[in-house]
Length: 180
Image 1 (tube, helix red, strand yellow):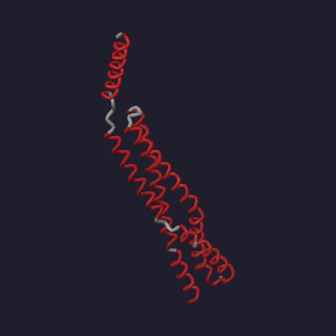
Image 2 (tube, rainbow, N blue to C red):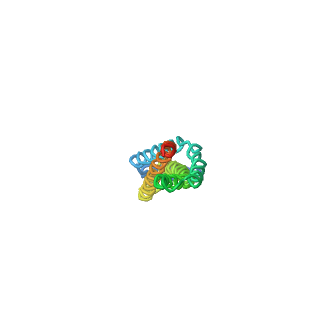
Image 3 (cartoon, rainbow, N blue to C red):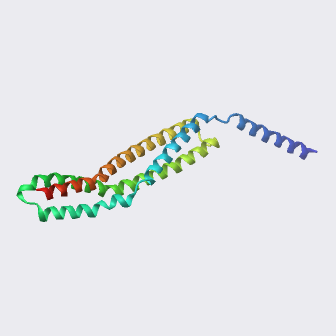
């Protein structure tokens, strides 16, 4: 009888403890919405990165080398000014293409890391396994990270647009050189 009363007492204590834990559960509805919004933004960034044709961008490098070599071999005193402008454009495009690989890989890795961290943060919020203040701090940190990644990706895409104009600039230069 004594064991039964002791078992019932332990059972009731455990029940009270668990019910108190359930009652003090923090509502993270607003925070979950913020995390979900950031996750959508990261998915959009990854989609933009995946849409970039990296082989096309890297294909400009041999063209630029050919153009610089042609200019060195064929430019005379009378058309040196036109060549200077084109050389400046070639060097600008060359610089952009050389940093492209690093920028692309960095943006991709940071986006994937952010996606993982947001997934983990969401899981912690759903399970109420972090304090409210910590949750707010983590969300703000991730918001800043996603904003930085997004800005970096936008700038990279703007530079790619400059690279994509290179074939037209190149064609125009050679047409002008033939006409002189």
